[in-house]
Length: 306
Ligand SMILES: [Zn+2]
Image (cartoon, rainbow, N blue to C red; front, side):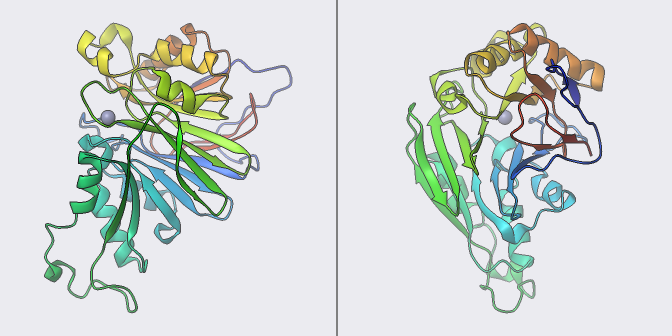
């Protein structure tokens, strides 16, 4: 994890260790891409309430294991919000549903996904398993086999509510990931705080709408000088993300899904520096798996590293 902050006078910054009290935390369960990387799982961002309930944005390679490493209770997972059907965002979904079932969760895993191939993947990800595959794995009192309950929606550029219960409000909007339809981002609101997660997208009106005024923007980022024109036509450069964060007046910015894959803090810093060149003056972090943030105090938040 690499940090670059422009702190107001008197602001306090902490590294590892104690966290400020906040009713909302974010844990990065996967900060990688399709590129093989033992240190970065596929995409996964957990937003966690004070009561330990949580929602998960995307479920790429290894995210279930990261959730266990983070100490999250799989039974307290309210819903998985999928952004699009690229494998690095969805490939661990069956593992999550099965592990949650084995852990004793009685209900189907709730998945919110854009209509089309993403929802279809969620609906069918367990179909390849015969019932016999779960012989003796279930806990007493739960169903015979794991299940996924997929809730589809047709995204629009204007944010629309896709989940609302127990104080959680989740809005989604269509973003622009080239030919991938539909690709979406999410805005998660809880206890007066807001977190936006981009999914994969160039900077577009959909993510601008979701990011407006949020306390934390989590956005994918590519290094302009080391990325192809084709990749930059589908994904956001770090510079453009910094510009978005400035225009949307977000509280702080977390860069994830970094391409090309950085090797060490020196290369992570390149992403932060490029985002800074976009004009955002608040705190910017290039995050790593299992980094954890308290959300909600501008210019002075806590971050715990793995
Ligand atoms: Zn991706």
